[in-house]
Image (cartoon, rainbow, N blue to C red):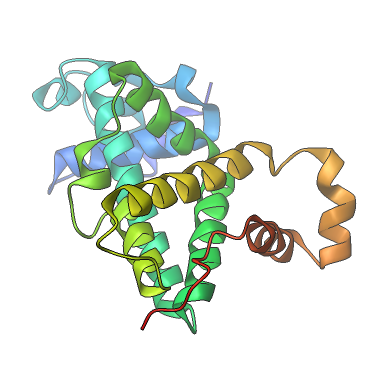
Length: 209
């Protein structure tokens, strides 16, 4: 168990209690994993009374939903930065993939909760596809910018799904030791990831008119 002094060093006094609880849950999640999360533990981490979380979350499940929602927003921001930093739409496609895998690798517990909650509902969150600024739409729109036909709805949806599944699969496998020699040969993990995405050939084969 974490030392209670850690929570005492971050006492909650005023402001957004819900935000403070989500932040506390995120800290616990990455430090100790989902099994360590409980409303009581989160209250202790946030420096509030054991009853305080119940003003916003009826149970641990609702708290995890809020944490997962936060995770999707952080992923959106990471992909937005990768797209903005890319010198061309073609390079942005690979950049989005690299940013996705790096996010998953840097936030393993949060990433797991994001997909665990989605699997429990058998549905990805609305914010992933319905929001025009969502991570999914960033991938789709980047493919169009790179030359995909925006009028071929089926093809663009299949291409976006292929790109997303490729990034998710690499995120699951990138830590395997069998890839260490490839990372060394490429000059590090990020160049390795970029090389993998380049070999996937996700960018459209024709240029935009």
